Length: 307
Ligand code: SAM
Image 1 (spheres, rainbow, N blue to C red):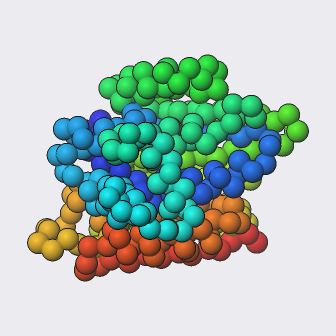
Image 2: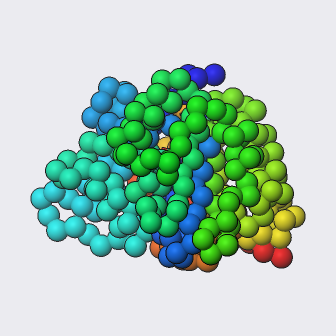
């Protein structure tokens, strides 16, 4: 427990897929005035340095946001046009790096904060259990001076989510929530906890939008997770979307990757906005074109459910 630090992985291909999906989902939800409850059950430290020791150890951002930015927003040439979801992602990252050098990577808490509205009674609840990352997150969030709009809770995110659902009604009476569930899966029990958490959350608040990230690795629990989530969404008669991105095996890399050598991951979204499929349909081939490394690379996008 607690050996995982997201600083080693920030901005890698998995973060690219996760944060593009998150931004495209939030953009749509923010079109309605009604306030939104945002929950990040596994928040991490909030902000990461891409030029720091942690990030440079594995160089994972090189095959993620740094590659994408250098190809699509070259410093010495005209930027290439990319699909809206990719542009939106790069714009958001660029906003954290106003001098044009990509050094700061915003994690999901800062992605969410960047898109939430101060005026619409949006609320952000962040859970982080790691003592160091929890402290760093609190410090980073304190600088935003967001007052009661953001709460940092150094608690277990699976348990902490329960009393937040259903969310309080907005001024117009509607209840709306987006929940990102993004564990490190360093414990095998995380897979079963995610399933239990989604089952419980759908019982408490069936119309919430739930986004689950998971690694695609040769482990039965990882293979089973999207199938279980699909069954839960189908049982609840709720629509779902499942996107995967595999950047493939770099020439000369070992056949069995550890976490640092992660080559593929997926996002499972329950109650996705109706616009998300088209956004990812356009974005995924472009991600693959620029991030793909060879053998085993690919992308998939599937939707279903909704009774
Ligand atoms: N969501 C972040 C982002 O996209 O920027 C990355 C989160 S990282 C993959 C997972 C985080 O969950 C780690 O910082 C870890 O310390 C934390 N964590 C692990 N178990 C937890 C739990 N039960 N409740 C809350 N946080 C937990």
